[in-house]
Amino acid sequence: MVTAKYHIVLCIGSKLTGNTIGTCGTRGAAKLMSALNMALDDWDLASDAIVSGSTCFSVCEKGPVMVVHESGQEPVWYGGIDATAIDEIVERHLSGGEPVAEYRI
Ligand code: FES
Image (cartoon, rainbow, N blue to C red; front, side):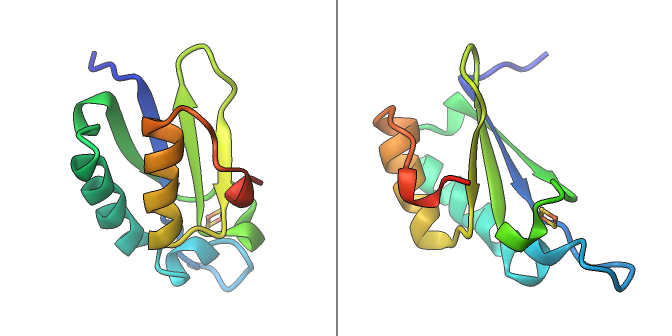
């Protein structure tokens, strides 16, 4: 089993059935996956993080949503994220150790 300090799960859910589930995908979440991987590379954190995509966390109205899991810590939920938020979260939370309050949900 592969282990890492962080497991980051980014919702890339898309509306499939006409209901309200799946707004992260329609808000550009798939492109954020690339932004996240690039930010991890920029901060030399790629080997410290496993990145996964999810279909829906059922908080679609707060999307795009990303959850940072760290061993021994409560998960940190972020919402309304974009590429700028991703850069800040990687710099301040993953590199600096402090969750970024302005994007927490
Ligand atoms: S689609 Fe992302 S929380 Fe529902």
